[in-house]
Structures are given as structure tokens and as C-alpha cells.
Length: 490
Image (cartoon, rainbow, N blue to C red; front, side, top):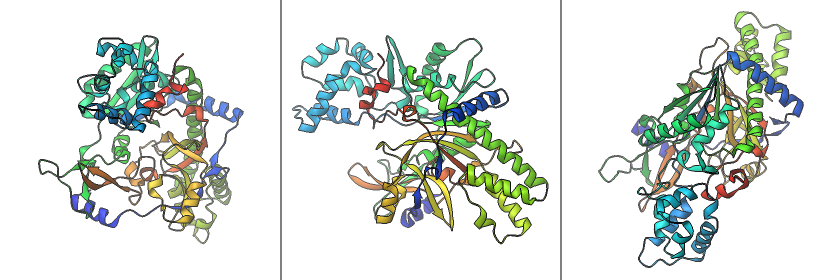
């Protein structure tokens, strides 16, 4: 997007998504029984020998937000006369009382060159925080979150990046290889390569190898920032201030992968090893459901593309869409000619497919599954709160009545019934972006984000939502999440 078009977009803004109703169990969300889950797991396992599978993990996000509370304390202690307010005192107390429970505790102790108890007994906590967050120490304040230790198994510490290797062995083992793709910041290429060697050394076993590839977010997808009057903001050297345009910019990276089946999961959503069986079970369940739906759709598309549509085939397709995809096509089909009905069904089904696990709401920040109205039709979408008109009481009510949350637990089919890869940008909703306010120094600025990778960037996909248990969702958004049970190893 060129500069002038970006400025026009800042002026124009993005339209809000029009929420019709939340997706709920039985109305957009499927709830699977144990027997059905087992059958789908078997379907997935039976298909692996002839299917290429990969895990796509966005891993370029910095850990700065994760350590925000501690960085605030570090700034206070950097002054000659550190005085904490009551909130900061609570944060410090929480940190010190739990210090030995963090998976990076022993690393911090090694860097300090003395025991943690002695290091904090002097009440000069600045050096401890500097060592934890500063570039001369462990550097977690500016490291990618994927390179931060999440779990400690005795003397063995595993980063979030490393734990994805352990998890992937359970469900991504296609033809003897575990394929994984990470998007990473270019400045940390060597660090990730070093961590990869550690992970493969820990988890490689006879008959299994890792095929790991990387990409970076294309700088061409960066967007400018503007002041509140929509004039471009310049950096200290006078050049335009550019910023990464969010996860939606990674659609280009995803589009370059040519696998039959691609799982997508956030870098920070990994639990300790003893909880993996549930995660693996539901990954296979989602993958099996993708394969089942894909087979049905491919069979229909082959018939639609090679012959006229019989009444019985049309009824079968309509029934499949209503029962499996929660889509009633009868209204769109009414009044169309035979050729028009055939072409409509081809367009409706010849699309990338995503099966998304969703969990029950638990007050986590992020998007959720909704029925969204556009141009007289309704479709299942993942929607973020920033995309909703919070000034409308009706839209607030719909948002507030949502029952499920999007944990980014997605499996994608990106090839058509002929085995050709879809061009994913063809299925983007360009009107589904977000403009947010931030600060640059002391200046308020506006920033532009492309449609989210699982929001507007997949808006035109065939979408299936499946309820998965909350045990499969264990994100680490703040350092305090590492103290929760899914990340504490006994």
C-alpha cells in the first residue's frame, strides 16, 4: 500500500464489523463427543502418510509487554532516590516472593554471580532487574518472547520456542519429518538458530527429523504512522516512521508455504510437558475434521466442475453446508438459473478452509467467533473488540453475550480440489483493518494494522469453529502467567 493510500485510509478509517449474533454451540460452533473425537483423530493419523503437514508459528513478537511491570520497576530504581508508590510496592513484593519459581531463576543467579537471596537482601534491586531485562544481562526486556524460558525441568530449561518442538512431535510427524515454520525478527536469526540446535538435540529420536524454516515479516508490508491530524510522523533522522502492520502482514509468509495442512498457533501458548496429551488429542481432532470436510468439499467441486448439477447433488450440498458449515444457501440460490446455481456453489466452496478451536470465555483479551453481516449475507468470522462499534448499545450487547474466545488454535487447508495452492490474498477483506492510537515519545500517533491473520485476512475462507477444552489454552501474556499451574513443573 503506497503512502498516499495509507494517508487516505487514516482519514477514512475502517468500517466496523456488523455483529449479528455471537457464534454459539449449535449455531456456528460444533461440540464434539468423545467417540467423534476419537474417529477424527484416527482420520488424521490415517491421512498423515500421504499428507504434508507444517506448524506455522508467528515468533517475532518482543517480550517487552510480558515484562512491562518489571520494566516499570527497573525505571524507578534507575533514579538516585527510588520511591515506590503502593502499586509498585505490590509488584516488587510479588516478584521477590516468587523469584525462585520463575524458570529463568537459575540463569539470573548465574549472571548475578551470587545467590538470589543475597542479591536481593541489600534492597538495591536495580542490578537484579538490569540483569534480567538489560542487554548486558539476560536481555529479556528486548528479546523475542520465543527466546524466554517458559519451563524448568530440573536443570533443563526450555524456551517457548523449544517447547513448540516438543509439542509438534505429538501431531506433526508426516513421512518421518516434523516440519515447522517460524516468523522471526531478523536481528535474532543467530539466537533462534542456536536455540534450534538445542531443541533438536533434546528431541530428535530415531526415525524422526526436524525440518525447520524461517521467514521475516516483509518490510514492504510496514505502514506509516500519522499524527492526530493525519500528517505523517517522522523519525529522529527525518525519515518516515514505519511500523510492522500486525499479524495480518504475515499472510504473505503463510502464502509462501506449500503444505497440504498447516497448523497455526501463537508462540506463547505452550504448556508444560505433562499437559501435552490433551493438546495433541485436540490438534489431531481438528486436523481430522479438516480432512473430512475437505474430502466432502473436494468431491462436490469435482462434480460441479465436470457436469451439470443434478437436483439430488444440489440437495446434498445444501444439506452439507447447513449441517456441517452452519450455512443456509437457500436464499442465495433462489431465483438463479441452473448455470447460476452451479457457479454460485462453485464460488461458495472453492476456497481455503480453516478449522478453528475456540474455548469458553475466561476474560482473556482478544477476539472471538461471531456471525457477521455484510452485503445481505452472514458469515462466521473471528472478530477483535477494536473492530466493533462500542458506541452502539446493540453491538456492545452482542459482543458482551459472546460465549467463546479465539485462542489461535487453527488448522488450514490451503489447496484446492486439483491440488493447486490457493493465492491467499484473494480471500482477504480489505475493509477489516484496525487503526489504533499509541505514543511516540511524547506525541500521540495513529497506527495502521492490516486485517489480522485470523480476522480479515481469512475473511473469505470456509470457516468451522469447534469447542476445545481450556486445558489446551495456556498463554503467557505477562511474566506472572509463568507462575500459573500449567507452567510450574513439580
